[in-house]
Image (cartoon, rainbow, N blue to C red; front, side, top):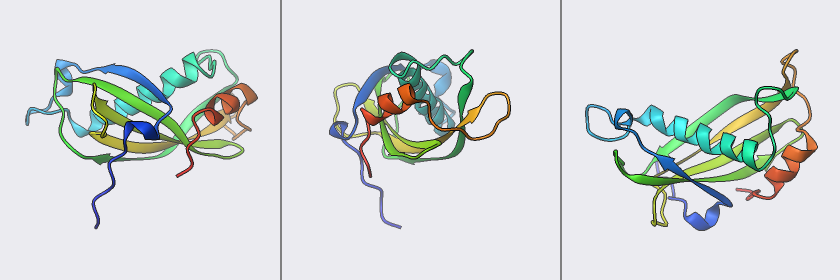
Length: 146
């Protein structure tokens, strides 16, 4: 299997700092693989809340994760200073695939990258609904079709 290409900062439209914690490290002395998914979730939800205006506790529409994946390019460890990169890879009527990447502060090549797909659903029924226009508009600003 060919090694995945490492994304570069220029591939992403939104960045935010990520604070590593001592508990992120595993017995091997680096950030455990499952923690990257927490970083991915944090950067995407930060964008949805701060830029797209999502009100996670009261909006009638919420996003459910239906698929995800991650590529690890080099290890990181506490107390590395990190930044998360975020973009939208693909937007459809009811779902969006996000592209996410983790960078060491000041470095251009990602230490890890991945994706996850949100299907937007009615909070009460759990049935898929169209992505609300304000969220769709904010996602279109960081759309980089892959």
